[in-house]
Image (cartoon, rainbow, N blue to C red; front, top):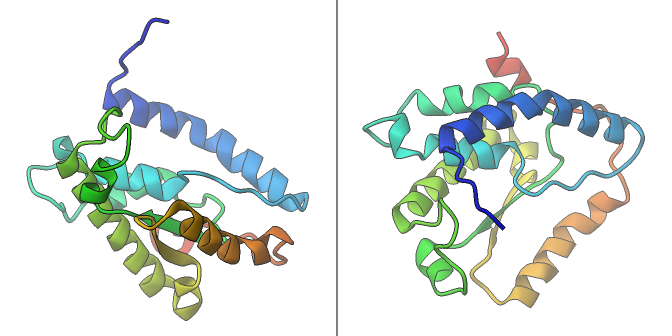
Length: 175
């Protein structure tokens, strides 16, 4: 198998090109009563993009988040976002760490900081209810403990959620 290296900027553009398809597919599934579970939804792309050293000579750059968030405005908002938090030091102790492009300790620290900023932003933008929609889970624990906590968070949602589909940042950033 031949490996092809794609630049980080190209991957960002490709993600933006695919967003309308994702938006449409997720909305159709939700409207059909199907529960959608996503790994690395909008927040992941924002965090990794905003954390890139090439975006700004300073970190965190005050303009980075709105710019990185812009392509995701009006995506269906998740009923729950679980941030599996682990320190870069803990992650390094696990097998295979460092094999992926962004698995460098300094980059992981920056990404983690952006995730925490996004979580704080989500809670402050949308009030008390939103705090229940963004949950930080300590992923540095034993796998079984993490899985049990995840199931406790997800099980009530699997039965289905009634109501209108909310949209990410629709009110604040779509003007």
